[in-house]
Image 1 (tube, rainbow, N blue to C red):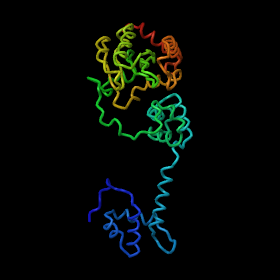
Image 2 (image 1 turned 90 degrees about the vertical axis):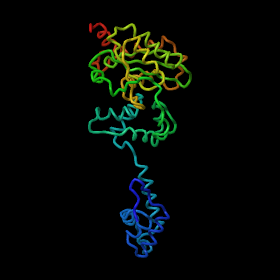
Image 3 (image 1 turned 180 degrees about the vertical axis):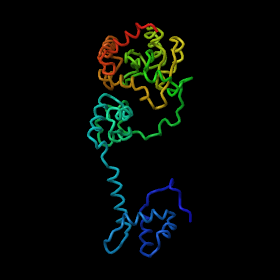
Length: 330
């Protein structure tokens, strides 16, 4: 009798263990028991070896074997995650800066070369062991949604999008000015939102207050502000796949620029603006109603971010670096 493929493997259940116990007592070989259950011979051998007991002079008992298997499974799935204190401290610190688990996992190996972690482990740690950290996640779902279910068949509504995979290397390595990342920060309290743009090399930030997160409002607000800068300071824009970016071609036509898009559900690929959004959230925590925020307040926060020294700029401010770049003749 042909055994099933390993790809169809399922753990032994209690009824199968009863059959194993019976035929084992009757002296059947492992191969014969495997043929009866349509299992692999090694499955039967491993089961009897791992879950045997000498109680009541019986080598293998179904009830005891089931108890052993259930206990082993229960403790295996309750193992502690992020056991390393360095990793745990790093995760806590970056979450409180509103970094995503993907960003944290990706950046850890740079900051601590001897350590690494998968972002899925961070999610499991938060939802299974530290639910108090959920408030630092961008979407703050009380329960973790099943992976790969919700948007599996969603088709992008953005026309003529060019993947970030085709973005030139000189943009990727930040060797030139004039390349931006754009995003929107939304509020559950109202339709109002923030449009955020960050120049990749200088980290110079623009924040626009939007009445609503429509593609028209989003593109008009950035067309208006970016048109004041020289053409060489607005060469390209990198977006995620949000609907506010549908009019990217209109911006390109007005500003004579190019647009690139992150891969679906890979917003971490525009890490500069994701990090900036975290800084903005320091001033506007989750559930802030942007309809009650004044434009003066937005301008104040924009100035604060642009006039704060940055280590990645050798402790110069984004405003200083950007202003110098604007003054250069390209």
